[in-house]
Length: 108
Image 1 (cartoon, rainbow, N blue to C red):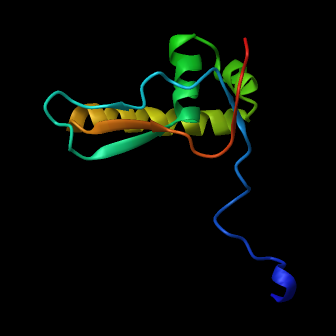
Image 2 (cartoon, rainbow, N blue to C red):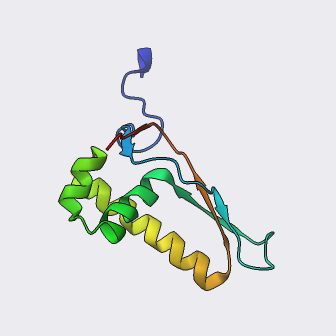
């Protein structure tokens, strides 16, 4: 279309910034003796969603509010993060934790 109207790069809306509690002290985990195996990438927001719900015991609604996202977005972050962790553990893969998109660090 002329003028670039109606053209989208990627699917859906642009990803908004997330609020996280902090950057994890380690950015990668390797199974003993398998440092050079396949890796899964866990994002800061996936890790934060799992921390709030699974460790802190917040409801998904409370966790979504803390992260500044919708409940559906939080649910997707939880689902994706949990799947990656379980696959990595079962298959002996490395886990890398990285930033993806914008995030703000919450000062609680």
